Image (cartoon, rainbow, N blue to C red; front, side, top):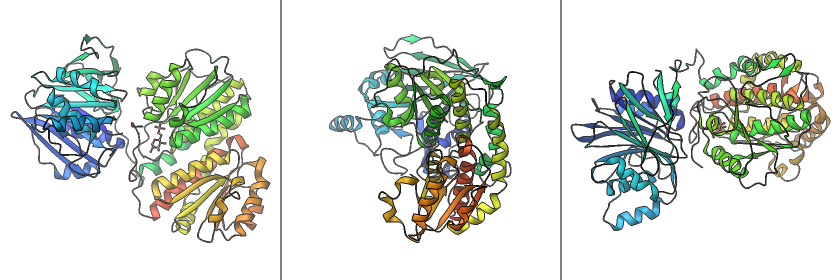
Length: 592
Ligand code: G6P
């Protein structure tokens, strides 16, 4: 999280920086700030809240060079003082940072003993003051002498009042891309290459304590021994226009409605002569004895469904694990680890794959964002092709993930029976057509503050995902539970104020979930069932039903997921929440 951006070149650096920050705001929106140099002095402006708050306050004009930041708070509350850029006490350096410095307290105490006075609670100020204390006229050299003292991970960009023609950048394990245009008239540093202002650029990525000296149209990179190195550049073609809401009230709703198309994009071109082919796979995946899916949040739930596909279709033992826990697991040889990530930048997932690959285990990434770190670090990477997902709450990426996972299972099983998948976009559309009805139901349920979501087999991860949607955007307590487990404790919570949302589409366990619903009804829980059309008996138990098209158990997560997404969306809408940018969250979480 946190987005950092810097610009030096022929355009107005302030305007360019603001534009870059707009494209990085998905990385955090607790506060934002910009600093630049005017006539040998650092000038800056910072403001808590979204970028729009900074824009309202901004009085800065012509800056010679500019760096900017959007913050997702880690160290220190959301205040102007803790917003980035941070400064040294001489006001000669301004620095923006993404990441965490684990030994910041120790360095701070040491610097304070030397008389340095701190003015924020951030670990970022510690980096700034440390670099300032090592500065003897050469800014890159001061950075080089400071980095070995830092424990943790970071991407930084900084300027010095005496060097208006220079930005220094450095990175360890956090994404940082740098690039110049073809005519060498401008240079950019950005947390995400997709924020490169829509022009063609020649870019490279910093890693392993590399340091870059960035000047107008010219970049030099030094390795951790401060030796000048030649880095391979990649061509970043001009990005297409930033997506718009196209008449929808929120990006989330637009992205929910895109799903008949995005699901098709995930499978079209990958089925040839009734067989699955992935052009991205450099060679066939052979000798896969077991599969471990890893991911965070929504991506972890997709992995959980993927593990069921693998076992049911390919008869390969499969599990899923939350990325931040995966590194502690024993992974048998010949396991294929599948790292799920929409953004390809989630720190927990990246750290896990680094450890897993270091043990000689192959990692297949499944990702939506091209050029992301996961795509560069995994052994293979399959793309979702879902297009940019703007809403923090992930929707279309999830259904594309499970489409790709279904194909992966069929691929490993070498199956030829793929016809049912082709009907899924139509099923999804059928649920979308019920949006007005789901909105009415949402209005009935929007006043409750606690929910149980429950399901069995395929509906278990599906209901966990639906509960996560509701939590993320409505700020109500919603827990996805295996329906069979509720009686072992959680049922104590049930009363007339505790609705149960029952995901009933898994045919194999239909009778059992109906019995579980009876047990909850007997204790007064309001019940909303998401049920396949044939399950008419559910009307005797549930207070409300959303009817879903029927499919095999394997493909049942699609329609149920869409209903869950719409339900969460309309509950959040009724509660007046900030749907696309919910409080405390960020689209891409780049700290552990
Ligand atoms: C954040 C987002 C979640 C997302 C998770 C994993 O926590 O708020 O919506 O599911 O990261 O993101 P990834 O990009 O790795 O799929």
